[in-house]
Image (tube, rainbow, N blue to C red; front, side, top):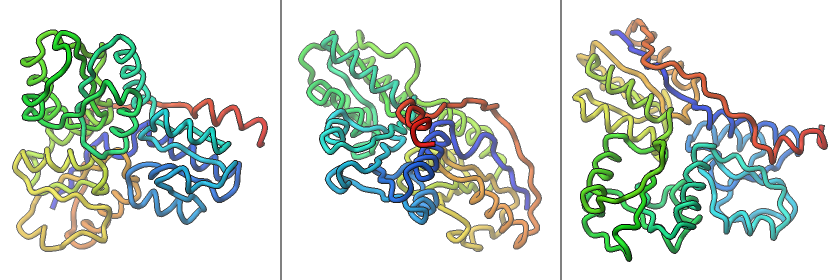
Length: 313
């Protein structure tokens, strides 16, 4: 059996930044440090931080007044920020800068009087935060069928934005439908779908046809990880989205000669290596790492944390 190990895979710059934020906050404040939503959508990351004293909450009311609080990488609405200020929380904003970019676009278009069509998945933390920037001017769509049902006040004053972790192909289907329905629709000068999401999807598209089976490391609530599995499935090989080696079924590999392994942008590299080691041990697998794109993006710690460091060190 041969393993193709996709590169790039795993942590993106936004996830690295958010994880470093929480590590530094735990060092500086000491536990407990509260986190609004999961810091990133990955079971292993969340459980490891929970063991270090992070407390993940779904409501600001769960955080004691004056306590340290991190906003997750997915971003939050202005209402959550205001609620945090009212409780005098020591807030650190670990929002991915690429998500912040979408928030700023929403504010801009809303200020100019546009109806904003957000392409995304209902209930996702990122979507909830983005829509909170302009709730009276924003409409969520997931599919081209949703577009057909849209009625807006002024069809000539419409703009679209996208969730950062969508499938590029799926998003383009919806964008094409929007352009047909609203020929004058406006859009940001730069694509909203993040570089890491696109790179990981491109690697799967290029490599999946060389494999009989694809393992995607990532959690079920990770949008970008689910998209990787869906793309692999659409190209022919069987694909399994798993959190780690404990979910592997040996029967999956009956008659399999080639396995592609990749990981969503919030999946740690050590869980990837555990799966590689499992296949080496049980099936005598060899490994070839294949680089499709180089990544060298880095996001610095947010100012809200950097400003605290001289005080707390």
